Image (cartoon, rainbow, N blue to C red; front, side):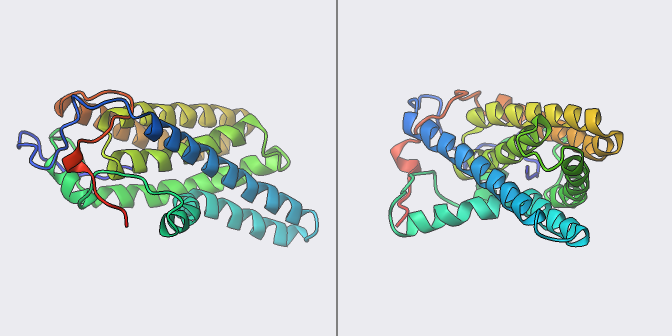
Length: 247
């Protein structure tokens, strides 16, 4: 979810100046729509596999469950971006966001000295997400494929908020609003972990390490916010010289 690299004490050469930015109501609405759309998509995936499960053998049911949860945990961001990419191509949706290379921008902002290097993040997330898949499959069996169970709802919400944070922080470069979203993400992960433990100690144990890593990511986002001007904690409009065309 989070990407790293340290630049503590260096000037913010690529950092957008947003401290006098205006509240972006359209941006808030668009991000709200993104959250709802992805959450509905992930729920629909589970509902579809639940329907399929009623017509296949137990062995195939396990395979279908694995495919569903791998798709959700590893592929949620890709899946939700498919309709968005199509909409932009046909000019149904044309958001205006700060331009430039995301990692070039990220490398230019100030970060604490303890920031993990970039390569650590995928190295951590791959095994953590694999553990999440295993935990979700256990819980899915425990709740009898009920995608409305709190354990499943919190889990899907945390997945969706994680994808939304990536878009807000890296694509939109909203450090302040990113702080709010990442704390919501962490809160839903904690709630999900609690629900998993209630249903299965093994499932709770499998997802618990993700909490420790997200604690690092959350602390990093907060530190970056504190070190880069403490911009508003709500969506703000970029200045004209930060905008790019999306044609």
